[in-house]
Every structure is written in C-alpha cells, then in structure tokens.
Image (cartoon, rainbow, N blue to C red; front, side, top):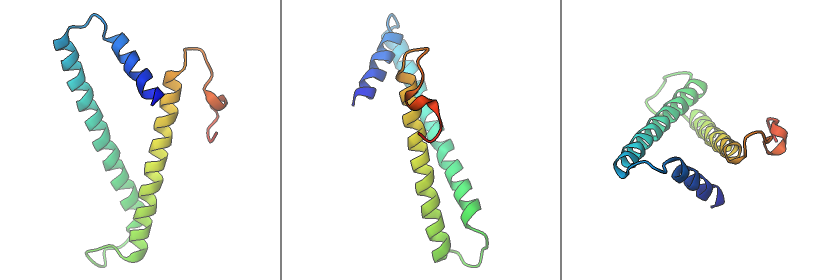
Length: 108
C-alpha cells in the first residue's frame, strides 16, 4: 500500500546516519510503545463496553441482551479506532501547511 511505503521512506530518511545498533534499539523501543498502546486501547475497550452493557450480576455469563450490546460496542470501537488511524495517517502524509483532505471537518 502506498501510505505504508511513504511511512517507511520517512522512517528511513529520519534514520539516515544512525548506526545499525541504534536503529535496532529504536525499533525495539517503537515496538514496545506500540504494544503498550494496543494494551491501553484494549483496556479502554473492555472498560467502556462493560460499563455500558453489563448492569447486573445475575449469572456468571452474559445474557443475550448484554452479549449483543458488548458485540455492538466492540465493533463500534474498532471501526472508530480504524477511522481515526486512517485520518491521522492521511494528515501525517501531507506536507506541512496543507489542509487535510475534506477540509478537516469531522465526519467527512
């Protein structure tokens, strides 16, 4: 995909002149940061959907209504996160000073 190639080129440009050992350290740090972000996002998803969908503790498993609510909540969260990620990626690929595609208005 074109945006992935552009990001790799930007990363390579930023790392020009950095030793291979330092590059490896930076990549490990980046991977750790990404893992922490994923854990944080997952925890946020669990907390939000549980708080919104589970109101009583009548039984050890979710009832049908709670189960549907959790599934719907999870899908909304995943779709919203993907949309936000795409928007940030598009903004990040633009040259400084350019307006975001769609005029930068939410919901476009």
